[in-house]
Image (cartoon, rainbow, N blue to C red; front, side, top):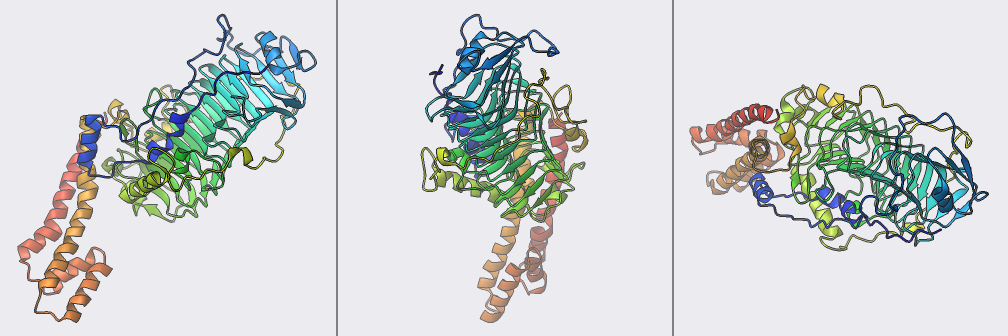
Length: 585
C-alpha cells in the first residue's frame, strides 16, 4: 500500500548551513544594533513538516508502556508470506511483534503508528524499498520504540528512514542512498540510536538528529558519503554522542548547528569523538544551496555551545579541518564554550583549526596535532583550562570568505556557483554487512553504551566543564546576542581584545608611510628601503623605523602610539575578561 502523504520538505533545515555561514561582517557595535533591532538578514521560512502524529489515525497506539524489551517476540509476521506488503503487515501488527521482510523490491512508503515494533529485513542488501523517485519516505515512524533493521531504502523524494516525535528509536544495519532530502533521520525524538548504517546521495545530509534536548542518543559505527552534509543536527544535543564513524566525500563532514526556525535553540552539548573525517569537499556530491556553502569543511560547529570535539582524525579537507564560528538566522548566535582537543588534523586547505569571529566566550583548543590555525597561535590564545578563552575573538577572514561563498551560491535563489548534481545519479554504494542474525530475539533501543564520562543529568559533556576551568557558562551564554551583560561584554572584548589591536597595527603602518612620504631629508631609495622594512617585518618593522630611522615624530607621540595604546587595550581587555567571568555565572 502506497503512502501518498506529502513529502515533509526540510527547506528551513536545509538552510541551516546558510545561516551557519553568513555572519555580519561590520563592527561588533553594528552586530549589537542588528541583534537588538531584530533584523533578519537571512529569511528562513519554516518547512512544511506535518504536525506531530497527523499521519496516524486517531486511537493509534503511539506511546510505549514498557520499560524493557521482552525476552521474545509476541508474534513473527512474515512479508510477503503472511501479508503482501510491509504496510499491511505494520497495520496488522501489535506491540512486541517482529515483522520479518523477505528479500525483494517493495515500492512502498510505510507509516508506522504502533509502538514497540521491530521491522527487520532478512537481507540488508536484498530487502529493498524503492520510492521510484516519487514516494515521500521509505519509513515514517511516529510511534515509540520502533526498531528498523537490516534493509535498504533508495530513490525516495524525501527521506529513506524517518522517525519523528517519539521517545525511543533505533536504526541498525540500514542503507539509505540517493534520496531527495535526508538518508537516516530523527526529528523531535529522544532516546535513540543509529548504528552500523550507511547513508549516501542525500542533498541535505546523510544522518540527521534535530530539535531535541537532551537527545540521549548515539550515532555509532556509521558511514556517510556523497551527501551535502555527512551529519547535520539543528538545535540538538545533550547526551548526544557521534562516535567511531567515517564521514567522507561529502560537501562537508559533521555540522551541528543552531537555527531559530526550529524549536529550542541553541544547539549544545554534543560529543564528537573518535571519528574519521576525511576528503570532504566533494563538489560532485548532491547538495542544496545551503549545504554547498561549507564545501570543504571537516567538522564545523555553527552557533553551537558546550560541544566536546576530541580524538577525531580529520584529514584532507580542502578548507577547514575543524571550524568553530557563530551563526545568524533571526538572531545572531555566538559559538561559546566549545572544547576542541586531542584531535589529529592535517591536510586542510586553509587551516587545520579555525575560530571565526565574532565568537562567544570559552571556546578552547588544546593538545591537537595540527599544523595551521586561524587565528595564528590559536592553542595559545585560547588554551583550555586557562582564562584566555574568555576573550572570545577569532579570525574575520573566515567570516568574510563564508559570506562571499554564500553570495556566490545565491542570496535568495541559485547563484553562479550553484550547480547541484542530480541526487538520483549519485553512486550506488557497495554491498554492506548484514546483521549477524536476522532471527535474533528482541534487542534494546540502545545496543551501544554511552562512553564513560560523556553524559550528565543536565546533558552537558563533563569534559566541557573539566577543560573550561569549571566555568562553562550559565543561561546568558545560551541566549542570542542582545542587550544583556554577557552580549555587551563579548562585543567589547571583540573590539578591545581583537579588532582594535589590528586597527592599532594598521595605524602604525599608516603613520610610518605618511611620514616617509613627507620626509625630504631622505632620498627616494632610502624612503623605499624603510618602507620595505616596515612592511617586511611585522610589528618590529614600524618600531625599528620610529626609533632608529630618524623619525621626526615627537618621542612622546611615538611612545603613546607604540607602548601606551597597546597597554591601554590590554588593560581594558583584562578588565573585560574579569567581567566576562561574572556574566557567565
